[in-house]
Image (cartoon, rainbow, N blue to C red; front, side, top):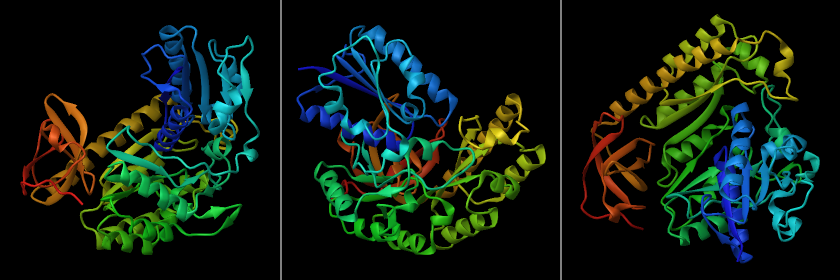
Length: 439
């Protein structure tokens, strides 16, 4: 029985796909082991959102070779699709598979026998036109369920359409089937994920469903207590979705909405499909129906041509906006995108200074959001995340809580009162009910 180990870089979508590919190996009689357990095969699922992710891939390959010098090393994922030749030149790589090939790797690599030449199996991205169902399971308390892949947008900073192809989705019946399988495994929370999740519903190049249709169907699935939407573009977050989530007992009050810049000038240069005014209206709509909703924001700093004034406009915009936290990305030049050709590159030192300012703002926003939730009663899903004798979990609206470790509570829902913020920045709680909630 050959041993196989997996390593995933990047997004929740990659985690869901790695998990599905690992189950395919187990079904074929391979034994899944930890990365350090001298595997016969390594599968490294890569990301290429930042330069740092490319460097991480090289480092993981080197570590794999140290652990198991004779193992077969396979690279899949976004970086593999974008730069297969570059990866094939990394010492120690045996095979590189693109987006259209990665779900067929067991069949294509036929026994994982090392050869002198690195195998490169990466078709043009147009060939990646099939939706491959994927979800993570047995990895965490919550499951990431892939409902959509690819992107039809053409943002000037982004390589994702080149790495994952055009927008395409699963069918609603297939997703419901997966959700029921996940429920049977005992998982309590499903996070809906995709490259452009709100664009759900395109199959064979035509729109056949809307995201709201999927949300309404999932809301009926028995055995899942929580559904969380991982990320949704502001132009696709329509009132009907917000209103439905506000009235749902299963879809939790938490939206992660990419902004990227608070400057309309920069948004236009990025070719985003909205301006700051629309973003404000989405936040105001959410707050009007879900005052305690958690609202997360993606923002990019140091985009070409972003002046000090443009950045300060973004800073002021975010400072005044009633949001809960930020994910801050320092712009990095990506090959085959429009942005680097625009000129006026922002010095790296300035990019890092701006990132630091926004990360500090994020901490203040999160602290304020947590303080506003003190005294509230909410439900916590406890996770197997133990640190210094404390376990952690998240409320419906994504407040991270800390409680004294109790093994009985792992993967259980409990009603609690949020009482105080500890020195680590997590919220401490008091029990409201003695019984663990179960459905």
